[in-house]
Length: 442
Image 1: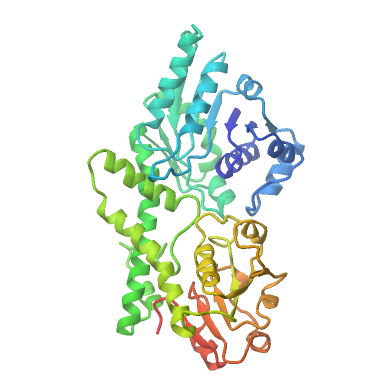
Image 2: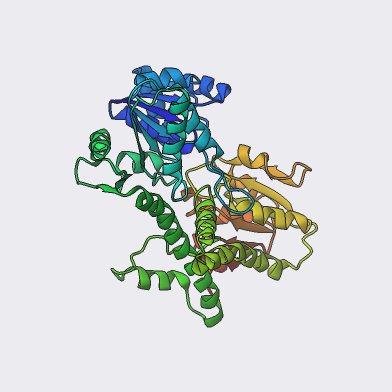
């Protein structure tokens, strides 16, 4: 089948590449000529395990094409996916200007029947507005004879596992009021759900709400565990043991119950804010989600307070090794990364930082101070040289079993370890003479 993807950001690029991997002819369109030129050479601008191989393979087999010419891509395609960004505005609402501009261009350029699918995360009612915009553009062209359908297909991609999530999804949800559209999209996505029927159709508003509701629920679980971790420390409980006790309850399950530094990235913060704003506009106060946001903000300060509680508020002359900069492992995404909040707080108190991340240091370097207070190191151990403390921020697998004798030889005597992800053995670290601080641990 022939597919046009508008937008080569995270969602658009992964979706387009995976559709091509399943035998479809895919045109990915973007206004950024430099980005398209790089993609035409197989250069992927984001780090995502497995993505570069799929892009290069399907480029070479001519199933995947990158272009700035939307007209060319539209003429060749039946399906048109809108996968552009919806960044948050200052009031927390989603900025839909890129979505609506894509819809306008589709209406101005299409010459035959198309199925337009909104893939971007959008507030309830947006897909209907896309339909209205395309209809208006066609009317202005006096081309009301051109038929089209509009649907919503939310993405459920986890950064760091997006290719796997796309190729083998938990579910494919289609919001549409048209049975023909549902059947054609079912045919398009059939290779992704061959082993089990995980294809669900529902009304467009329900599909739009499902996307926001899913992310809001996951964010709520994270904030609940983080808030609980503070109480665990006060009463002498271990949040990791509590997590196991909770997670083995079949009604609860074990996912997203890890205490840490709070959620970040491009989805949870943005989608929680957008849902709160959407509800407010409808006269509904989502008090639980407002609390989720508040807990998430406070969790990073809670961790910073552990550091200043140990060293004092004046960190002049202190050196901190930062392990992990991206908001989560297996990605170079720095959006809403806890490392930024923590690093800036330490720098503001006079600290020096020696940082390492397997893939995100280039992007982090664009965001953190360049006055010499931050040194980006070639490996995790070099970051420890002469450090007063190790601050583990992102739970990259390579940090789980480090060489503690080597660490002790590189750091200053009496150094401290601040484990923001409860990834290290507190008993082992303390036995080696380090002061250890975790989240919700005693």
